[in-house]
Image (cartoon, rainbow, N blue to C red; front, side, top):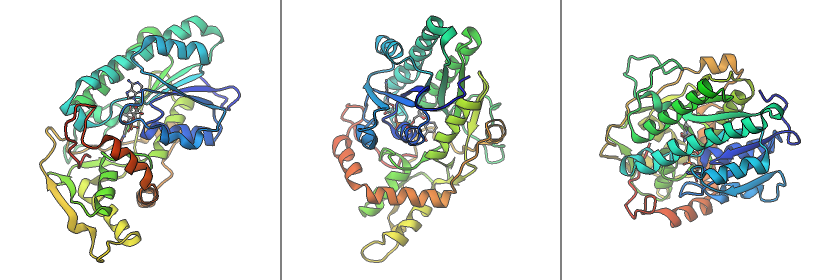
Length: 365
Ligand SMILES: NC(=O)c1ccc[n+]([C@@H]2O[C@H](COP(=O)([O-])OP(=O)(O)OC[C@H]3O[C@@H](n4cnc5c(N)ncnc54)[C@H](O)[C@@H]3O)[C@@H](O)[C@H]2O)c1
């Protein structure tokens, strides 16, 4: 296991480091000088180099554009940078897109993960004795399916029951990761985290969708009755959990990460609008609540996710450092202060899905 963390001895590859969570992760690692970082990202619609603008002059951050399905590109990455770890965030991540076009999810989330696992193994076999190396596989609580109102929260022992093509592709990647530990001894740890929110999240996800619709005085879409429950965690708390799992997790173990903030979509929307009413009131002084509009539900929409993170808290000595109220306000303020970032993204990507030209349905959760 890698133990000593500093920029001189550690070099981490971060796949998907130009996306929402990955870019927050890379920034945190560089701010804390934990390791030299090589960000490897295909720059799909969800990847954005602007997310890493503040690291442009950092000599210990390198960006490489590439596809995790491309075996040669991945092999070159290993032989060029000799990493001490890989954090695998790259994925197709949006449930609604997976319902419309599942193929990309299988290709990136399953085949891409397979290539990374296999090339990691080859790298270790070639350099094993001299190498301190770990693979951190980043996954989601969606692999566990949907809870009934009376069910206890998910734990690492909850049977897999993925319901969307996105969740199924992530579940498949988790199984491959597990197989590479048990069959080949790859030193790997998996984390399964709940819904993230925070700065740099692509505007198609629930929280940015609500903020942007409100400040532009557009209808705020909420799926169905709005009573679907998600367990929200601030992105920086997730990133700290992932590093704790890399540092202190047991090889082959999985760790469920969550902040203990289960809320219905309606509660989340109301909390955002309460912040906006206070810090960015509507020009006519009326509450943004008047804009909330119910839209037809997502097919197969999971009703409830909730995480019991007791194992991670105990074994990783990790706990979330932010309250929902504080971090939500921080997030709302970030979107208000970064209009150029999201306007530019929307100008480039509104109206199309993965280049198919299909219309984006807003109101994603
Ligand atoms: N967002 C959440 O709430 C959440 C919760 C739990 C787990 N996760 C997991 O965390 C990871 C990151 O999620 P996110 O919300 O930041 O996603 P995101 O969609 O914002 O970012 C994904 C990144 O991966 C890159 N990418 C996609 N396909 C690629 C490929 N073939 N090769 C290289 N790069 C590729 C994209 O360009 C993008 O930068 C995912 O694995 C996701 O399943 C997300």
